[in-house]
Length: 326
Ligand SMILES: [Zn+2]
Image 1 (cartoon, helix red, strand yellow):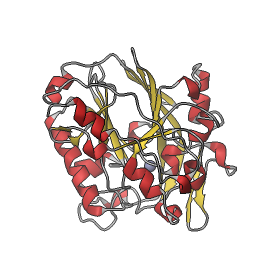
Image 2 (cartoon, helix red, strand yellow):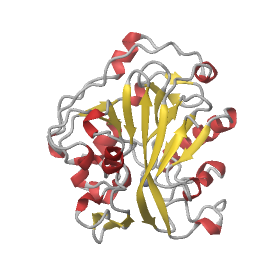
Image 3 (cartoon, helix red, strand yellow):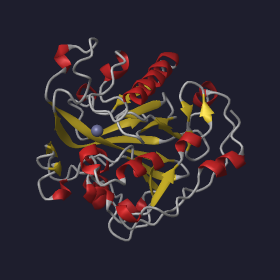
Image 4 (cartoon, helix red, strand yellow):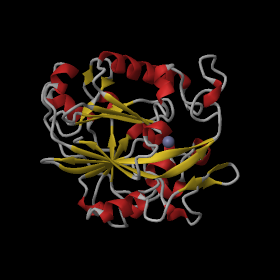
């Protein structure tokens, strides 16, 4: 469990080559940190960090009946096997000393067809959003520009999570985009469109920091867990299945920690019933990730769970939701 400095340097390795086919990104490194040697999650949660956490609903995407939860699983309630509009959410974490980190960028009206994305008719996602609802506009309304951020973390490279990157980080920007190496390598493929990746998002010009999260120090139940600033405030967790490099995050905020499952679980029912999303690239991985999240949720009931696209969590709350402090 001890987070040795050598181990830390070992897994935060720069990827210096092999990215030519997916744009001209500069490969950068997140700041090196020496994390506290956490014993377990109880110790982490006994030491919350005074972060402010704000959720921004950037729009909604229309998903088919087989997308959010496995249609043919006997545990799946029929009521969930429906086409529905679901929110695409971005999270701003304002740290008292480390600056602001954005987790996901939601959908964007940047693609010339409203905020729809994909490659029609092979893969086309319908989207709806109000003017100014995209993350760049909502942050600008609060006096925050993309360049003011310390990092942008992308949970995975689908259009409802990485769609806002272009508008947020214009050409020549210096803010590193953090994502897992596994996600990047999965997107670096001629068939990325059928995997749900949108080329115009991936081919942007922001600096990229690839995280070898599988080599992060292991924490109880959740396994490899990256303590982003070394103070236990923001944790990045590999939860593959929906995509190869899917991430979840844990925010150790005062009051109660938040777990953001992103698309390891679209809905509360994915965790409660242990039924994976309908769209997965690796079913066994998806089941294993859900099992870890479920065990963690059962062990730490004080953690507030926020799922990737659970409509019930955002209904009637507006486009901006102050999650912490509350
Ligand atoms: Zn999604």
